[in-house]
Amino acid sequence: MKDRGLIEIDKQCRTNVPNIYAIGDVVPGPQLAHKAFYEAIAGHLSEIDYIGIPAVVFSDPELATVGYTEQQAKDEGIEVVAAKFPYAGNGRALSLDSTDGFVKLVTRQEDGLVIGAQVAGANASDIISELGLAVETGMSTDDIAMTIHAHPTLGEMTMEAAEVALGTPIHIIK
Image (tube, rainbow, N blue to C red):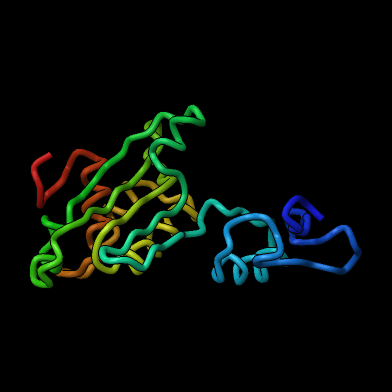
């Protein structure tokens, strides 16, 4: 057992007792239901890696994050580009009268790899899923910018944020 009564596990969620695994709130890491679900699957198929686990605050506006924040990346010595796209530049947000907020990508400067993202605004809890996939699978800003997104949707703001990172935004002036 660790401090606070948490059970120590390895990268496959095994405890120090053969054939006994532990997941969820009894092991270190964020206490999120979707983390436990991930551990139950990933622990048997591969090693766990928490970088792609999103966190959401179901407030008004909603807040969501995945991977590194800009500051966390800088603290680890990673040179980053942070690119923000405002809800006010999105047609669907305008039609919903939900123009407060932003989608922010945190990407490695050297290659545009998406290492984190934050969303503040309507449906941030849904938008963060695509960004979690980007972090988990090693997508770049080019990958996201070249992915066709339905229009008008809130989800297309991920594409717009990628275009800001690339210096080619269409719906805002950089």
